[in-house]
Image (cartoon, rainbow, N blue to C red; front, side, top):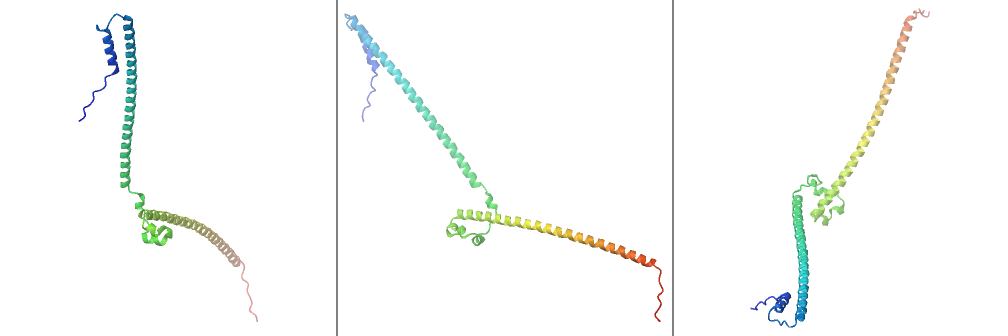
Length: 210
């Protein structure tokens, strides 16, 4: 089994060790300027490492925030998909339980449909497809009801025309009847006057021929 290697020591640790050794008693103090230059270089190196560490930390934080944002977005998207899935499942169940209006429409029987419908509406391919057959039967029923409704409207128009014609004839007959009654009344009055006049004239003796 391979032995796991120890993590590498951070660079700043070595710099700090060098600074500590430089400040320790083991370092010769006969050249203070050299020590100062060496210490300044190590300090600058340590500051550079600190800036790099801070920059890396900020970058890591940004990457972490971006990853967290992506994870949150993915989680939100998953929740939306689950919600949509449940919604679609409910809608599908509603559709399955829905009693469509066409189920209550009285249709021509299948035998009547085969006889009355156009050939292309009841071909063998259609008869073998239950869904298409139902659509064709509903379509044929719609067309037939439109045709019958148009016939009903035409008959109503004819009925209205006949009623108007009958009413006109009835009015004519009433007028003729009224005129006849007027003529009869006038004739009766004239006859009465003639009778009265005849009664007022003295009777004349008429000799019989010898």
